[in-house]
Length: 176
Length: 191
Image (cartoon, rainbow over all chains, first blue to last red; front, side, top):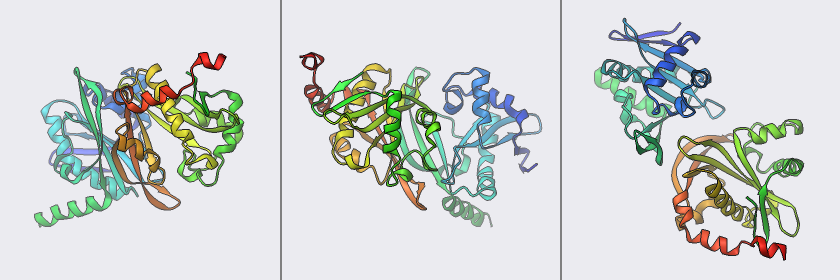
């Protein structure tokens, strides 16, 4: 099993036994994790969505699982939709956002994907860490859905493989 | 909802239409830019392919000819967010005639009067987006963005435009007013 580390936070490829954790994350983020929650939170519905993902990783520290990153809608166009979600405490949010750029690197290096898409509501917690400015806005859906009594816009962002390579190499250069 | 105009009938699809739809969709010019990117399904699988993720289908039929000119689909309806997606297909020889765009007006009328949707969206390939440009210029439709190089069509990267039509803008549009004036009332059809 592939495994990697940033300080004491690690990630690993998900297995079918992580479905219950994915459900826990979906419930914690209802309805912001729209792909998982839009049809309601019956465990069967959410688990069916989780089982449809092309690939996923679980992010954890020594004590517990903290969040997940999953890839869906992969196909002939060699693109994929990324979802990143964490439990809602600050330790989980910080740990997940710290390690996401590394997971992006792993996703590009382990696959032939040429672009990743990412969708978010305007008031979602930002879990993309220092990769956030690398994403380019493509679509904005006004008043997409009601969250806590107020309609929120939803945006779709893209990061191409070449964008990732340029930005991540500039980080590496500045560290060197 | 069935809508009659001076030259077209917009009506829900029936199983009797499948063979004719299959024949007009089986068009080599549009196969790669339409929904069956891996090729047309065999006839025995056509019905399930046609209705996949689909909530309603209306056909546009010529009033005189009774030929099916195209069809419009409402799909991926999300009732929690109150929006859905649409797609429209025109037979090759009727493209540019305005029939299917007339069908889109009827579609908006049907969807926004009979479904609790606030927005309908469409993906349009770069090659097809010109059909929406006049609606965008008038403000009846909105280009919500462009997914650059999103698809590979015949080995070439192609942009995908996302077009949105809101209930609010359709219900108050001058285009809707004009369209409904041109509709043929049930009463005059009976006479």
